[in-house]
Length: 585
Image (cartoon, rainbow, N blue to C red):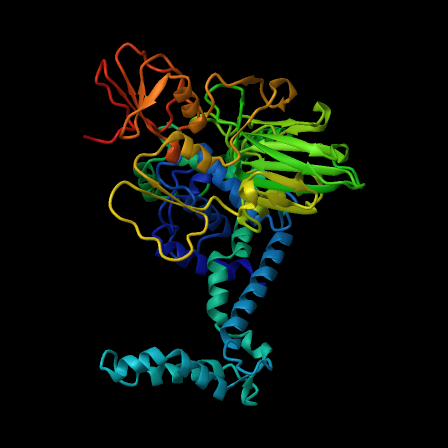
């Protein structure tokens, strides 16, 4: 493994290429942080480590967002996920990066292995390269590319690959192929690899005894942020970054200033650790028994809406089913969705040891992700249901494998000490079967099908249209309800729901279901253009965002509706007022 001195100069070169070399990293020393180191003195690892923090501080970013970014960075650097950075993490990153580079080298060389014997000969390279350059050859024949460019490409490939044949036996082996592009791979790893970044992080002054905690990493970043934020408004401006980078660095470091700096960072780290401990407590999960099978489920939303809301009327709540299959082993379920959802349990519910539920959305526009999720469960006793304390404890995922699912698996493992035995996910579900992880959708369909909406003209469909819907004219609420929520509205007794907040019936059902309800009771009508005419006092249905938004015409004497119109356009006849989401004139 290269020593720290071997990494410093490539990293400095990278920083120079981005215009950040020699910038104000001395700020962490309580100095005016600066531009250039004294002539002839290479930057220290600590200085480069501070540069690494500066690279992650763009203009316009507030402190909380910056710390969130550093938190994600720390999790990436913590290779063994033990909650701290140590030389062991550097070693593990280096091993993985070496293996990845070797894999890339093998793929680059063995694509020429035509007979699959694990060796590449000159004839195989020549035949393969000629095949790949046939387009260039064809173009040269009609005068559209330089004559001979194809032959030159073939010869370059032969020369490059056969240069790996160090024992001169006429063929390139796996061991020899692993050396392909080795210097470039090593340089890229030194500049951008996690091993190099982790080594630099360990050079920060917040690291003690060769270890760096997440609190110490964030404290170092916060110290840098506050040094750059000279007007103390909680945001770093472009001007502040420029001034920070231009400021000269004092020729020496005052020992008293260094001691004061270390004390300040230690105090910041202590406060960050308190915040981290509080976060872990909020995102904790009850322990899992030894015999229980852990099942992790993910979805963006379900295919049905709920007849009851959780917390407030402007929250769009979905409803889905969990079918518990027969069996002996107890089940520990973790369910993460984006949308607020009530999960209705049925089947062999006696198998359920624990249900942990969360939602990434808490149903509030512009809400604080540190607030609790909005979710509910029916069919399970209250003492077996838990809700994560914050909506950002675990991100939803709707595909496996995916970055979201891997992060969710990591969160479960960190919380209960075990990785899930089963992981299942889909964008929109009707029901999950557990513990198998089978997914049910309405009517057995794998998706909602294709909808083509046309307002005029002729449309010809040739061949099998499959699950295709063609809508002519303006959108109709009933059609949209069936399209967006093929499972319809599920009638739920509020008293049966164990939820993160109080459960009450909707005054007006959410989204298109609410529009259908208002049309049915005569509170609104729909004109030929598909706009909804409001002639009496109503409440906006929750969830009219994005594709679910519509246009409301509030007629004179009706009074402005209660609730949140979402992204819908609202035009008021009496005042001529147009909402911010209405098309411009």
